[in-house]
Amino acid sequence: MRKIGIVSEYFYPHLGGITEHVYFYSKELVKRGYEVVLLTGYEGETIDVAIPEGMRIVRLGKSVPFYMNNSFAKVTLGWNLGKKVRQVLAEEKFDLLHIHSPLFMTLPMLFLKYSDTVTVGTLHTYFDSIGPRFLFRTFQNLIQRFFDKMDGVIAVSEACKQALAPYLKGDFTYIPNGVDTEWFANPKGKIAHFDDETPKVMFLGRMDPRNGLESLLDAFPAVVERLPAAKLIVVGDGPMLPQYQAQAGVLNGKNVFFEGQINGNRPEYFASCDVFCYPAKIAAFSVTLLEAMAAGKPVVGTDNLGFRQAIENGKNGLLVPPEDSGQLAKALLHLLEDRETAARIAKNGHDWVQSISWSRVTDRVLDFYDQVYRRERGVPWK
Image (cartoon, rainbow, N blue to C red; front, side, top):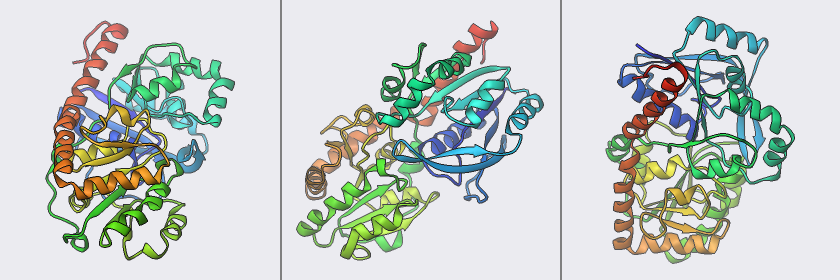
């Protein structure tokens, strides 16, 4: 049995795209007979998710949030962290190490530094702000040395490649995020307090500035003006939650409902809405858009580089300019009122997302492992 170490700063209880990617990919690996060890930080609390037999979690150090690139990121801190990383590598003797966001602190870079086995990295991040560009320019030579330590590099989108290519010399292989198409297509029902005939829009994401919730809250009064019974279901949590609740004003609790952090009943939440909206300012490739498509919902996103890979405007979703609440309101009303168009877009999205089910994406990643293993070790991975 091959043993794979998967390194990620992001895992439950932290919710987000990388967490989802790591968890569902690991589940697929275990189904195929691999032993998986997830290497991450510790946040002091857990969310009840099923950890399949054949998958273990090793937590090193304390996971601490910090603000970067218009989002709240994570970094693991702890005494003798490098020593702990070396010890894990020596004890586990991985056949392959797969590091997520390998060019960011701290666990990814430490495991990359000390790895003595075949090592693959997956890049998830897109940026266009001054801070990350400054860091990559300033530490370009150092970052290049870490990049060169990887035997193979995956980018989840063309947006990731475009962001990093100016600063790094090397090859990127594009393999997208996946989605558990079966789980999201088969909810157990609807959320009881949203099981009615009123038109409903849903947002799901962290309360980060980059995710654009403020634009949706700006747009929703125009939706309510035309459809007074309309509801906005806001799912997610984060430090900016009180600010967004205040922004909702008199609609909070009447037309806008903040549900907090959820996880295991996401299919039921998707089943409870008519339209899913994710108006992120910048993105690499949104997992939540894929989940909504898998759930058979029409989606509205913003016209950014990452979302263009998932949405063909007018076919399997609608794209509006970032931070344009007027156009966002029009798009939402269009799908809420024109059910024929909404059904067509939902079907196209559902059909398209089947091509990136986790089963198919895992096939592509394992094929990539095989290419890398043959080159580095002279033997097949499979």
